Length: 403
Image (tube, rainbow, N blue to C red; front, side):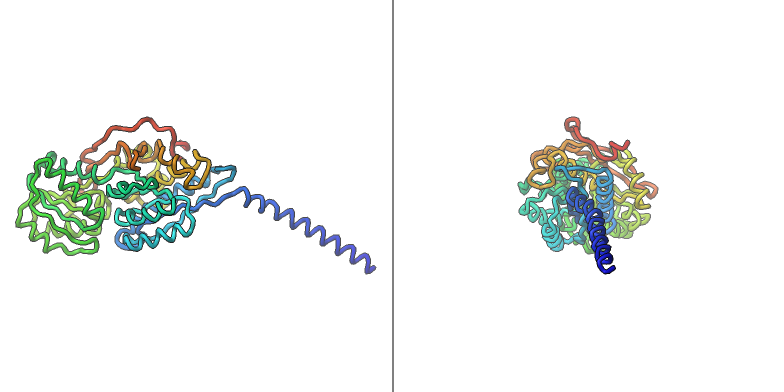
């Protein structure tokens, strides 16, 4: 009887062992055939620019989720992409801390940062680590003038934007005297400098050049000084968190000048912050209007369905940036940065925003710039400036593939 019990227990032990192995083996095989690939993202996710940073993050998440759902295989392994998103608070110092953190986390590629002021110092960290970086929204020319083969952007830069803005101010708006304010950030000062050059070349006269900070909300002193110069137009280089209150104060002081700015204020938040004073303000944005982007309407519908909110600004560009990086990995059949980087440089891609081709510096070829005006409490298209378009693309976005 004792022998029978021992035999039974031994038999059960064998069965349990075999059953356990049978359950474990598929899991082990699955882990060997799947590969997690980390893609970094950084933007201001808190603070006054959080709406823009969360918008970028939303575009990146949408692209990552679609890529994972499509069952991408690279190097014989099914890829599971993971977005590591960090809050850089639009602060250059924090931006570099975030960059080191993402490098230490062994990301395979970087999407960001949102602001030029954070993107430029962080780009050296990614470059030194050999990690490709695509900024969906940093427009300072300095970003791609550093000679880093790892740095790319997918919208027109401020040299292009400033040139268009200067001509628009002096020709379409017939401004002869111009005052300029900038927020001393890499973006704000940079676009103001390019605008000033363009105005001067176009025959305009700069009657005042003032500056503030990207934390200020009281501009009465500098606006009072500008009022005495009686400019035809006031240009602001900076972001919406300063542009909105500034617009209110311009109207309260009775300054009778047209107001023009760059993409930093092209945002529903500007109208909310400025209120009725926003009426008649002009702003530019690199890229086409959303409803004229090749796949803008499809993207807007998907974004709305997922987040139950409207696109703020750069989400489509962030979505394209992620997909461009993934497409380069697929063409290289590798997620190793040094192996897919050459393919990234050769990108020729039909995205949501446009056809995307990089020049030798990593800048977008053939970028569009759109001018907008606030009319009846809404941003409306005034004019679209198009550069020559690059050759026909050979890759398409996920939205294109799904129709």
